[in-house]
Image (cartoon, rainbow, N blue to C red; front, side, top):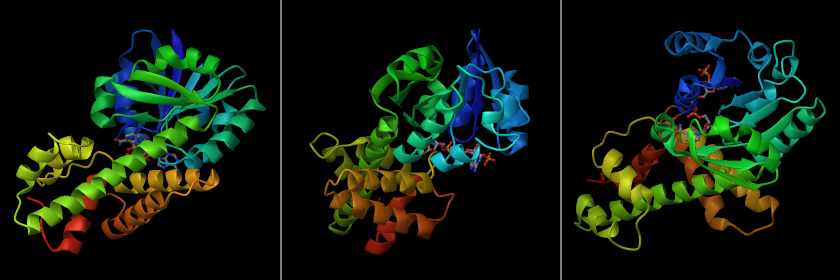
Length: 297
Ligand code: NDP
């Protein structure tokens, strides 16, 4: 039996934790800021409901966090109820937050002082990938620590890749999501222009998806979410705004000119401000429609 703690039962964290709870060789404790969510999850899954982060970490060999941003993880470390109060020497913190490399490196250094390992391990594949256990996990940190965590990560991850030193999983995840953002925005602009030029969106997508301009946005997101006007809320626009900002920051830090990443970061900040904290990322297309004065149909 491996003793695991999971903190952060949000849109993606909850189905990831459900996969861990269902694994026969894992004994799971869960903690969530809104305690009722953890209580409900524990009673459905049989996991232990921990009262505090320290309580969750106590006795755990592997502690997994999945929170909006790295600073949320950092803020859970301290205080009498904090993670550092429960983590024991030799334990490993696996941060599945789509985080930022600088904060992850700082967290890793602090934990190293207590003999606790750290890897950043953001995931990709959405809430459905989490439910099905088919997420991609991109890992930064010591490769030996990843090998220790791999059997646990395999409960929700299918492709688990070592990317480099601490922070490199975060950097790769941010760039991946910046590409997603570019595709959502540019597909919306293109389809809005085509709608005004008299080309229906389903006809345009049929052609694009058999041609060189296709992407996950054109193949899946627009047909399933925009053309249907369903816009399900699975991944908040606020989080994609954060991710593109991290990608632009990585480019800046590396002194790589990246005007397209910066422009996309600005556009998603504008969309986030306009549509609010709870909007889904694909709803950014609604802002493009508003600017164009046309609905993508
Ligand atoms: P949600 O906003 O749905 O959930 C956030 C979770 O973090 C909730 O459990 C929330 O608790 C908790 N939380 C928020 N702020 C704090 C805080 N300051 N201290 C402690 N707990 C806090 O986010 P997601 O689950 O969608 O995303 C989590 C991470 O995974 C993000 O980094 C995101 O970018 C990434 N991700 C998300 C994907 C998706 O499809 N949703 C896909 C891939 C990556 P409470 O219940 O109290 O609000």
